[in-house]
Length: 196
Image (spheres, rainbow, N blue to C red):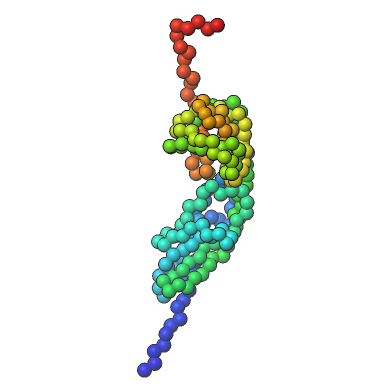
């Protein structure tokens, strides 16, 4: 009796989003999605890569990975499927570009409010290497004194907060906004005082 073993077939995989040659604005947020199948077994996982850097993986269909806070640059994205016997296949690359832009959310002199709970970091410089001076709590108020500055994939504003510390804070991560324009009117002046 002759037993013939059938070679394991590698899975198939394609990156279905984002679209090839898509352009985003930093800090960008995008969802990578892939279609994968295995004709003689099952797909164990799909990994997502930017160049040689692994971004994440998904073990259940539909296969996807949410990528946020992406800085300016050009990226070559791929998906790699692994089947239940360890065979792998890498998809064709999808190229995307993330560009810097000057935020017009605020102007110098605008009143702003922290819109992230529980707090927003304040740094001594407009970059992630800047020293963290402290944090400002949710709904803390301040006045824009400089900016915007694009650095490390984020848009930064220098804020003179109503309470210390003052410094540079990030506007948002591309998905969520952490600083918003304050629209509330200032409190009325106290009564019964003589203004000199």
